[in-house]
Image (cartoon, rainbow, N blue to C red; front, side, top):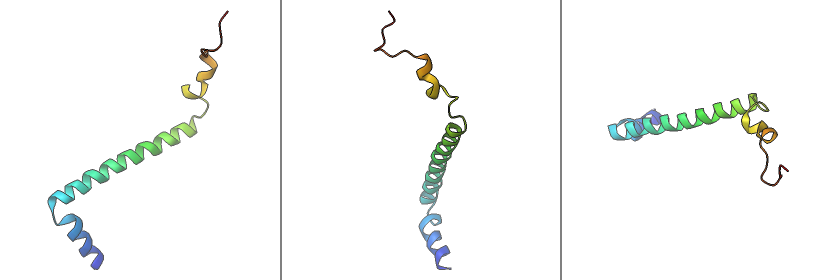
Length: 66
């Protein structure tokens, strides 16, 4: 019972704190979800993305053409 009372008094009692908590949690979830999906996508498609094969098609500035 003490945990629920503490959570109520800290978060839910005042509307401004509740709204700020909801927005902060939504922002943190959005950032972490985006990071996780991006990491999964990079591992799943490793070797097929432009950042992985760019060196095959781009010439470096050091190599002269002629």
